[in-house]
Length: 440
Image 1 (tube, one colour):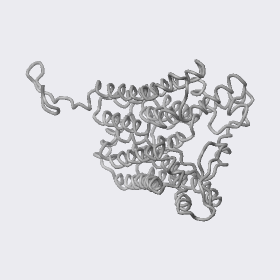
Image 2: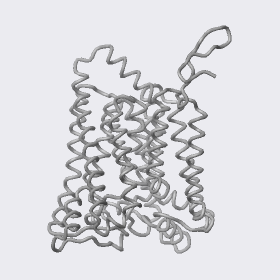
Image 3: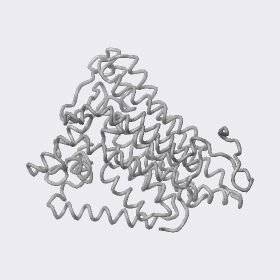
Image 4: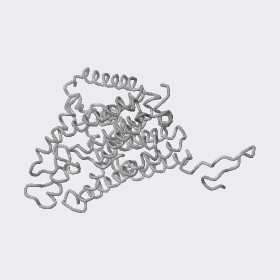
């Protein structure tokens, strides 16, 4: 048997390079099956006892209240999530409350499998690298990837980003559905609107999905609640893990007067209060939209030079989604799942160019899981080592945001007066990630 990378003899006496181990389809799929088998074993006791973990107890309660008592979140009452989140929650309850965890896991596994298959479909080395990276990221984020709504939206965004050009209508549907489950994929839609050459079919499909959902909610009498998730989020304070909360966390840990960590029982979150916290909440309410607006202006400025370019769509998506996390007064661990799909597709588009963000995000993911669930109770209790881990994680988020913004500026400089060679390179990158080609 030849070593990886050596030539092997084929019929006719010719030679061809052997396929590296990590680029063999069966190895990727075996790793995927093995990974999710480990997940299933870990969840086995919970599934067998009919229990639920993570946020699923809350999801299951919502499903039971809707199906048994007519209390429909987002339709008959205001809700913290967009109304589209009802669909997977109700789907997981289709066989009754005892099977909720199992069906949720099956849905997550199916979507993850779809995203991996789409990543490796082109049989490119970059696609295989992206698939391995994506599975490692899911492993690092598994405590939330398996038990939160983001676990559903993240693989949908992977597929949507890859299919943007060859299947823009389907991509628009997927991204819109994901955004109506959790809002963050709307940032990807915004970036694609500026940076992608096939924006109009995507936008038409996304608008159609949105109109259909709003019309359905209106027909059910819940139109006044359709945007309730916006006002519900506005009522939140400084959550423990949010980057903006870091100074108050250290003040609480160091015993500063009137500064403390407390549990918001209404939202089931840990928040930090102290001098100036209400000012910070107000400032962050303006800081996030301002940051997003500035990134969009930067993207438009870059677009004047590079036009519709795959790098612009991907870098813009990374900047916007990371800004949603970095400037958020809420800092839930699952928010890191917002960034993963963009980086996975970035690795597929340009492995060397996306080496820095891919490594940064793996470090961020590892630290996030170290914080929650491993160090969470010490963090709440004022442990300074746990606070240091969180501070490093938050600092890396800002570094990642800075990298994305610097990448946008560098893209404009590199494409100024671009030659035919750079145009050919752009087309090659397009083809690799599905950013070019006819709608099929």
